[in-house]
Amino acid sequence: MSVVVEVVNRQQAVRVDAAWLGRIARQAVAALDCDTAEITVVVVDNRQIARLHDRWLGIPSPTDVLTFDLAGDGAASLAGDIVVSVETAKQVARELGWQARHELAYYVVHGLLHLTGFDDGTPGERRKMRRKERAVMAAIGLPAPPRRPRFPPRHAR
Image (cartoon, rainbow, N blue to C red; front, side, top):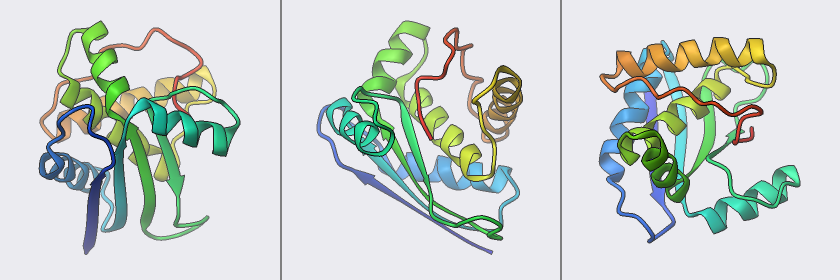
């Protein structure tokens, strides 16, 4: 079993506890029953994530999380980059009435689920993914994310 998680903070807008976020990611990988993973969590601001969103998906606006699967189809392990916007997390947490660090952790869980094959492109897929998100958050000792009223999702894969 080898789970490697690196957290890279590429922004200065909001203080981030990278060690805590790394522990959360490792716990979430374990909760997903993955024995082998190499994950990089990149924390950015809205300007940086908007630039990536535009470059990779042609959408020139901020989003909450972008996931880049680096393992390839049929791989036995997880490998990927999860880019999260700390500014979006702070704003959404304020709107939903919970902690920004929990919102950021939720983005990481969401990105990990994309790496394991979950998708949220249709209402049915989205419901299935939301159930799994709540289960993983509970398994790692975090509160369930508040319901998201928006569709389509704000993030991109």
